[in-house]
Length: 399
Figure 1 (cartoon, rainbow, N blue to C red):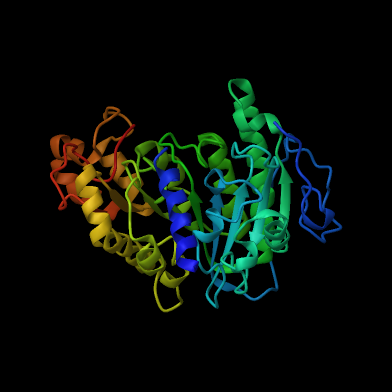
Figure 2: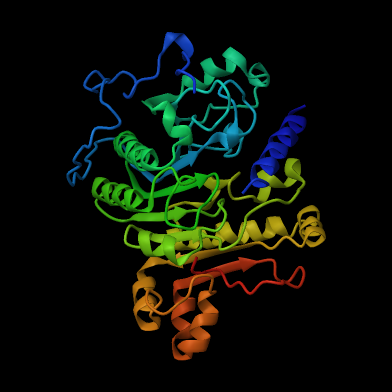
């Protein structure tokens, strides 16, 4: 029975990948959406998202026990309905272990009819099980269970779900304000030795984040603020789930704020798999917690994570489908500390044309600097060995 529901989950994931205004509803136990963490009497529940707050550098201090890694996993829930237990809640298997705590930040204003215009922050513990038969059908039982793990809700203006023109930039500022508040609550709630951000949704190669909800300039403000909260750079930004984030525009706006960036310069997903048997065995999103421990460096953990993705591609169902569809896939890990030297020595910011593959540009114009490209893009997987590609791609491009 459980395997059947797992298959349903991954059918939803496949549909999500293939596509690379109501008032907020009441929550369980008569909770209504607020801008505050639950049970926090000092929180200003009436704070407007449009307030142009000034965030000073503030290194958060906490006496709570540290984890090895705190991961902020942001998702639009794959377009899921708020009262449905299918999909997003089952993508990540274990949110909490001795070494790691994953916070799910869910953007519910994802276009699904009837969803509340809110951002919810969930801190799931080891007891969380979205496969329980009580919640398979969704509905109020699922909502009550889900909201028992909710630590914060932030209102989002309803117009922001489809904002254009000047309103788009105003909404970006609203999301920026919301995420600054969210990040502070997360860092206070679970201090850690290391921090990462992952997005489960559509990508954009222009430097904006969360499917364009936060513009490139505002994203830099957010990352800078998070750096001030934790007193250092983020350990990594994981855009490996997202399409076409492996671009100069993305890295040039983010390398100052994270040690490593995982991205693809291609479209992601679109293949079928033996989801029931292979997803929680090999797919990094399904077993994220298993890659990180104090016995390994973050760098090694990220390498092992990409290698596991490659093994997932090598399973017969996935490989055969990729070959049949001629579906090109690749992922890279970038070392941010190597980017500036590469950029300066090869004049990426001056001479390179949009649409160029960076490695080809370097080989043609600065062949003596080729090793600096590999120092920067230090780990790379692809399925070029599955079939002959009709595209010259090496994991990093300029849009």
